[in-house]
Length: 95
Image (cartoon, rainbow, N blue to C red; front, side, top):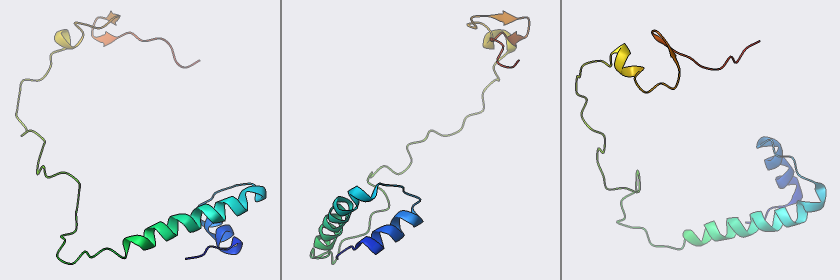
């Protein structure tokens, strides 16, 4: 497939891309090369090949949810660099 400058401008507008006109010829050549490479994929025989939904054969890598005791205030603040009774102390971020 061949890309021309009008098609390139339309794609750039739709994708909200801003590029200099001096690089338009290189961009047209690069996009044409990409589309030619994708067209080569159509030459492959994919009959009998199941489509992939993901690249991993893993089904569920997440652990099962387990109910546990909640973290207490004391334990939560145990390693805090600065604390003030029941709260974390952090630097002021607003004027």
